[in-house]
Length: 160
Image 1 (cartoon, rainbow, N blue to C red):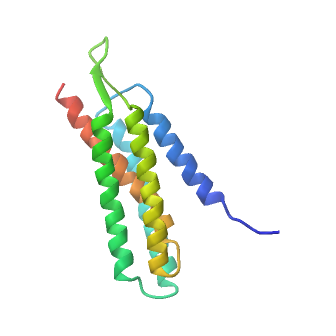
Image 2: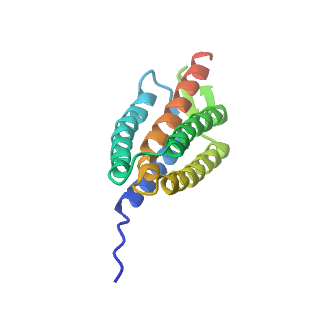
Image 3: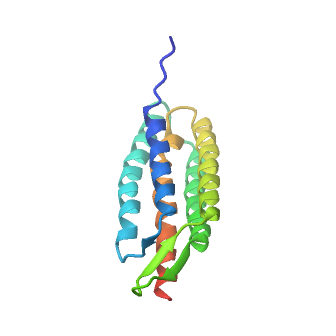
């Protein structure tokens, strides 16, 4: 019997699913509420990156290409966050509150973003030759993408 440890992968799928589900709900734009999830993901991301780097360093030094791919991955996350922010519908509700809701385009960009992260993560892990840096960078990727999106949505909401 083959032993597959799918726990971390299932947890990542669950986190991404919850983030996307939350995006499709109508909810108010709050001053700090939209930054809590990116901060939590950022803490998990920092821990993940530390563990990912340690998992590579255990076998050999981290390669420059792996670092470049990691930085590129995080830049892609910010770019997708900015693109998704433009697809979020923002309006004033009946009590003058500012509301937000993701669209089909928001969801599509989330799926494209995650697919690109998977490709970059696999490439990163291939160039590292050992360890799980690419896989461990998922939470940092989500934190940067969601944080960028939420900051830009809040900026658009403030202009209403």
